[in-house]
Image (cartoon, helix red, strand yellow):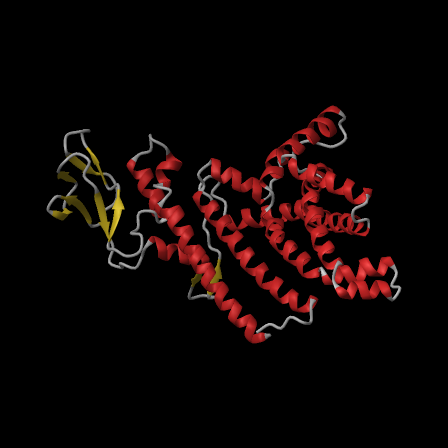
Amino acid sequence: MFEYILRRSGYSFLIVLGVLLLTFLLFNVGSGDPAGAVLGKNATPIEIETLRRRLGSDLPLFYGHFCRSEAFREFPAGSGVFKRTFGEEKIFAQTPSGMVEVKGDQFKGAPGTLFFRYQSNGFNSQFLKTLQEFVSFQKKFPYITFFNFGESLITREPVKEILWRGMRVSLLLMLPVFFGEMLFGIAFALIATAFRNRWPDRLLLVLSVAGMSVSYVVVIIMAQWFLGYRWGVFPLWGFESAANLLLPVTVGIISGIGANVRFYRSVFVDELGKEYLRTAAAKGVSPLRLYGVHLLRNGALQIITRAGSSLPFIFTGSLLLESFFGIPGLGFAGIEALYNSDIALLKALVVLSALLFVFINLICDLVYAWADPRIRLA
């Protein structure tokens, strides 16, 4: 078991590195200049330079000694005469003949010339900064720190605090939804299996398919209109008390229960045709024990698999529920970060989601061996 955990942890580490590389390519290569997206068109060269240095977006991607700089601006515009506007560092200009060091406060060249500042450590790159956001070493205790995602570009609040605060809210919302979907889904699936090919089974199948066919957004809007606005049973917006969670939790359970009933019914009907259940029924085992113990226990692997695929969303929240009901969880934070081009928070959410999926898959494999002694981890 211990060797298996070590081996799987090694595989998981490689997967996480792959996720970090893809995240780096997505946000640092494919998304363009974050300073321009955040500051807008009217930003001064000093503002752009300051934000780029804080984000590390001026650094070379993987290796290099030249960092993109706004140290000079064209003065006057279109003249080809550039005036220093930032710092006293060693600056180079990109010319047709190569890199030329700029000495003094002015430089004459072609309009649109690109300028770069020189750094002695070529390994100081954007990719190294991405790795340091995941894990970094320091000389003082605790010597190693994880998840140093910096500050939000919009609120200047540490990203760690935003994630922790949002995760607690998402857990309060999604835990009842998760257990409600699973418990009601299993219960109704057992009823449908017990009355297979009879009217309770057909009724539950029709309701399940109908529930799967209706859009999540339609269920949210209808629930808000009738239960919140028209009848005033539940509050519609915010997160002031537990009452604000009643309606979104109800909507989440109703929207997800149909798919669960269909899935679990298929699993139970498949198990129902196996010899051990026919033998137990022939020996006179009561229906309650037959379905509630034997059938449910032998269908546990499929239940664990489905539950494991849903568990990460307990922590990361629901984009639709949190957006429509104004619940400040991680889903809501992700939408806000996307609207505001908050690259630091978006990167943190992507990495957090990947880590949760990898960790929960490892836990599910271990739970398989506990649920079914025939499984040997090797």
